[in-house]
Every structure is written in C-alpha cells, then in structure tokens.
Length: 255
Image 1: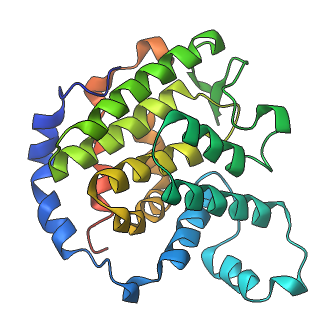
Image 2: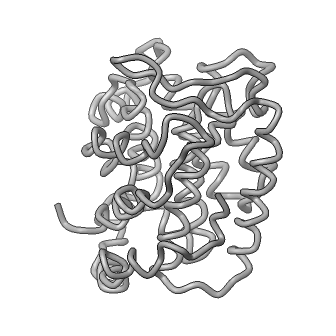
Image 3: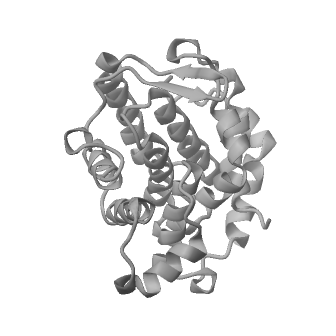
C-alpha cells in the first residue's frame, strides 16, 4: 500500500478530519499538563502497557524517584529502553537509519543483540486466542517494502500538508508499518514512535506531548481490532482502514 495515495482522505475529513484544527487549537500543550520529560516517560509506559507490560505510570515514576534503592526488573528496563528510543527520536531527523537506531534502543530486553535494529529474517505471524490472526510479508521482501514506505515518508516530509493531512498520513504510516511487521519484536512500540515522529517533524516538537499512546492503551481492544484488515499481507483491505485512522485524533479530545 502506498501511503502517499489520498484515497481515503475525503471520507476521513468527513468523519473527523474537519475537527482537527479546533482540537489542536484547544489542546493543552503547556508545561502544566506535564513537563516534556515526564510526558515522554508516560508515552513509554503506556506504549509498553499496550504490549503487556504490567508496570503502571505511578509505579514507574515512583521507581524513578528512588531507583538507587531498587534493582530494576525486566519490565522496568523495557520501559527505560523505550524512553531512550523516544529521546533519540526527539533529537534526530526522521529517516530509515534513525528508525533502526530507535529499534536498537527499545529492543534491548526484547531481542538478542544481533537482531536489534535489524529487519527480520524470519517469517512472522500475529497470534490471538484462537490462533494465527495475521501472517506478515515474507522476510525477503521486508527491506523492499520498508524502502517504499520511507520513500513515501520522505516525499510527505517535503510536502506542504494541512493539519488534517498530517494526522491522516501519520496514522497511515503507523498502519502500514505494523502490517509490514519489519522486526522480530518491538513493531508496535516502533510504530507508535514513528507516528508521533512524523507529526512532530511536520507540526513541531510540542506534538511529542499528545497522549496517543495513552489513548491507544485505554482503547486497546479497539486499537488491535481496527489494525486487522486481512489475514495476511496480500489480502489486506484498506477500504476498512478508517476505523484505525480515526483513533489518533480522538486522543486530542477531552476524555
């Protein structure tokens, strides 16, 4: 799927895109809503929670206050590594090389060293309670698909986009990335960084503060359900993508 295609944008605009300028104008980007470092840690905690990490934000922040008294377990280290990946993204340009570096940072507790920051060489499936729910593209085609994805991203970074277009394409990047499933593990975490990274590149660094990960975590069942557009990479039906694309803007609404 080429994300550069605006096929679904008119309908997206009708559903929620027309609200975005007002939602962003009314969103609280002030320090009173949490300083930048705190919100980065919150993003990492919520993103980890989506993947099954049991450490909540309160527990992680209390650990941060007195970490010298405790030996961090794997789940704490997983969040700390994801914080480092967010911080790296916030300080660097969005491109394929830097995304691989982000994955190398976030996957330290997830993968052996040789697989961190590297595209997978294995066939990957996504499994649910009833068995295999999605089969990703074969490993020999992953690099090709990622090159195509980043070709589209580079073009979009150069284009003059409206606010609704920026969030539309950010969500589409997230969606296509997850469907490619380029890594052995850490795909969801990387996809959520990538989504925010694109928005921040287009609209400014303050957009790292939007609570997208918290919203996805709170609506985890909907998040996973709307990602499901087909049983394998070749049978994905993007005509059903608007359910997922409309989730991101909702994080800007007062809950």
